[in-house]
Image (cartoon, rainbow, N blue to C red):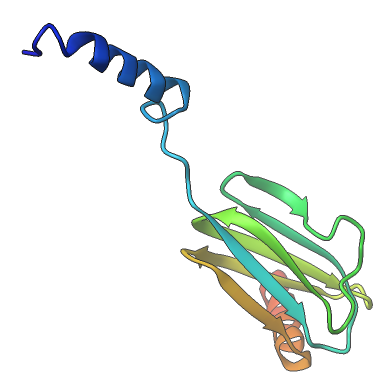
Length: 124
């Protein structure tokens, strides 16, 4: 049982924590997903789907040219990402997990292999 002299202090602390969300919810950590385009291709769109993100084009219509990077903050979780290049070829990266900051580099080989895997998955 709390001593009567501590009851007002406890009530104040509890009210303060609730008002700033301390007892109501715990803020989820955000991580940076950084993607650099080291390919010779222009990436026209990058769509990410996952926890708290619903099919969002992170490029917002601004193409990712060779040598450029973009980054997006995401909470930990499992995601799907689709990229469309200047030739309208689709690269889908499915079920990748973010548990910390990530740095990806798109190369010609990586993009080509991803597009081939995506085509094979679509025609099954």
